[in-house]
Amino acid sequence: MALARGDQLLAVRQLDEARRHARDLAPTLARLLAEQGWRAREIDAVFVSHGPGSYTGLRVGIMSAKTLAYATSCVLLAIDTFAAVGHQAPPEADRLDVVADAQQGKIYVQSFVRDAGEWKSTTALSIQRFEDWLNRRPSSAWVSGPGLNTYRSCLPEGIPVVEDSESEPRAESLLALGLRRYRSAERDDPWSLEPIYLRPSAAEEQWRGQGRRP
Image (cartoon, rainbow, N blue to C red; front, side, top):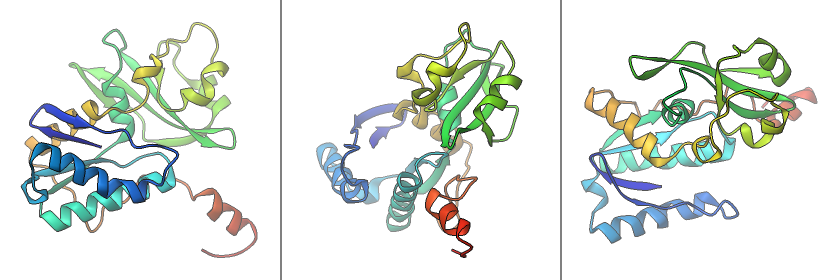
């Protein structure tokens, strides 16, 4: 969670992953606002990463952002998590595959190319078997994303890989992409915004595997 004024980040708080984010989000926001002497209704916009990612984390984060936007009448903008990761790639990278663990030997993957200094997606976000993606990927493409935590050791030698510190989305990247949308007068609807899932949760798949409906 972070606060910013324009392009300048004022404060960043990393929530403890061992704790319940639903319990910590609102108190953390209250502390950040108090430290800056802000009132919630002075917020102009809230940017939120909307996936892919942890099912619970996405639900909690997006619902919190939607509630804040509704309560304060501020602008709500969702940022693609993989676009934020791509924003952090080194300047020498011209092609990039961003990956995240989709479990059961599968990954979320999306490909990007650098065009006039900006990353443009060349494929839609999809779920693929790790081996299938590895066999089809362009040899010149760099690899980044949270999936490196799981699959880095499985990548053949010689594949260009983004540093660990740049493979997870950071507040700076979400701010930069959010401001780009905000200054272009783009807006998201708090009533219809949903996380990017692409697949049911493990619990839902297990439930359906037993012949039951959610």
